[in-house]
Amino acid sequence: MKNLLEHTGIEPGRLHFSWISSAESTKFVDVVKKITEEVKALAETKKYVKTSTQG
Amino acid sequence: MTAYTDKIRQIASKLLTEGKVDMVIGFRKGSIPMMNQPLFIKTPGEAQELIWDSHCALNLANYVTNRKEKIGIVAKGCDSRNLVTHIIENKITREQLHIIGVPCTGMVDRHKVSAMIEAEITAIEESGDSIKISGNGFSKELKKTEVLQENCAGCTHRNPVIYDELVGELVPEQSGVDPYASVREVESMSPEEKWNYFEDLISNCIRCYACRNACPLCYCPTCFVDESRPQWVGKSQDPTDVRTFHLLRAYHCAGRCSDCGACERACPMGIKVREFTKKLNKDCLELYGWEAGLTVDARPALDTFKADDPQDFIK
Ligand code: SF4
Ligand code: SF4
Image (cartoon, rainbow over all chains, first blue to last red; front, top):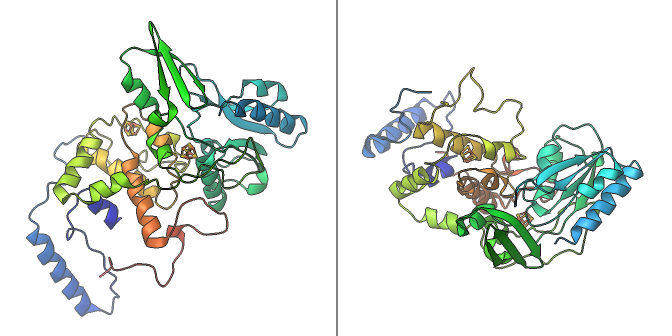
């Protein structure tokens, strides 16, 4: 999924996958921090944003 | 290749006469050139309608989903791989099928041929490797190798992978062809270029779903694009909706696609739908050593887990 999205033009760093157990609270915090930073660095996306109101 | 016609007729009529199958699925001549139609016959007399030439590119595995009868089916390399996938996915049993294998030398790209000539093509004949197209006031000879479908030019499984009998000698498999050349080209682009490449690729899509309907893998009783509760994807022509359709449809074919090219052939707009599925085929091969439909004895790539599966995308 990640490969195909990036192949079709989604920037690497936009999409993240992670496996976090409910007991891993610190990992959860770390992952969210990292994702937020990386996604912020990419600037706002215009991709997969629908501008029309149809459908 | 046309020599196969007699053999197919003979086999079909024998199977039906002896009662070994209830029905034979093959091709008959289409009402316009290059558009052969699937044919379902139940009596030996009808076997004379069956034909074989380089326009039998639809994938007949599409028509056996959930059928209850015993079926004789004409299958070239790619069809046979989709029959394997159908068997693995419990859409038909091996015992129900009598596979009439066709060693294949590729199918003619109808979009390519039509683009060569301004006027309407009213007839097309072939003998050996040469193809003659003609219409009002013109006729032109082509070499079949020049007008092959792109997937056929890069095909490495032209012989059926399973069959009960063959209509001719096995053909040599192609070596040194690169089915993934265009994928590699896109891979070397920047994200922006990739985005625009696909934006351009699907810009003409009218969402007729002919590509989906021609696909033997797309057998869900209700396709995600037709669902309205919940509605997974917008039904409009908005570029985001069009792209979402293409992306998800491709993903549903991951690890299952034989690259038969039926989708591209069916598309009325000449859209290169395979650019999506081919990337997934390449990934399956490189990450899991998997090519769809080669054997009924292995589970597909997305259906198994191995401890050494690449998983560095999960952080
Ligand atoms: S993909 Fe291969 S087997 Fe299928 S029609 Fe083309 S050459 Fe034949
Ligand atoms: S067949 Fe072509 S136009 Fe129709 S939905 Fe598929 S890609 Fe779009």
